[in-house]
Image (cartoon, rainbow, N blue to C red; front, top):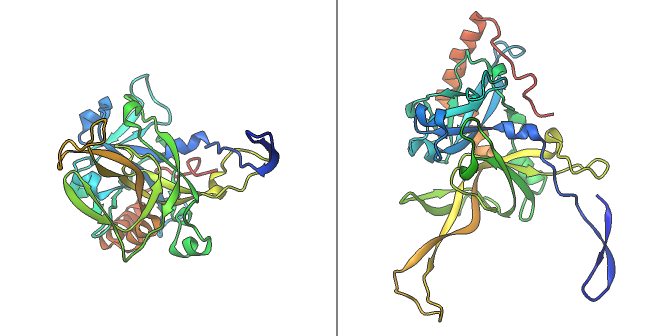
Length: 322
């Protein structure tokens, strides 16, 4: 990161430490899956739904050859009816057949009893090698201890990857990258209260200065702690990115409507606007949930038995952060 000379409007020249703008590796865009309400809308790329991402855990029975794969998004995404998942294919067979759709039922998702998290185990026989997908492991999640030891807090940079609804991709997922910074850290005593789809919700989480939009719910949010090499802008995923949490949505606020002279149109006349704040569910809730959920543990035990009885069906080699 170079020293740079800066000239002020008065002509004064001084030197400052300027950090290069981050360059996000293209393969990180493969972190994302899209969620839809039904198979047809997934295949035709309907302009509504949400985002999600995939992580893995090595099988305890056959850790060298088999892995448990999970899709994660927000519980409210599943509650709103978006349970069908669309993946990009690594080697599409034609100009149109560029994705694979998994028509999961809402009941097959495992919802966290308290936090805005939902997890769907992938079938044990899924061939991950055909999916154009980068997978995250649990050791890339920010833990409570790491949050404390790294002194993560207000002003720290982050990056999140999700679905820009206005140009999300009809025939394939085209994720977009956005940036922001932490504005407020989680406080167990003071959950964030907000209203979504007419329902009042509360969630312990980060408040982030970032312009989240509809469609980004379920996006992975990464703490950006770069170790710049030779003044490079390139972000090294395995060193510089840690999963901070899951985007649960932007926080709206109601603003009174006024005329040009500043007078209110009426006491109850208000318009909902984007506050500029995004809510993020802390990663350690996801980490605890996948390790401790009885339903997920039971599923892993069944899948481990399946793996013992079947040869490898695909491994995440080539899909891991590099």
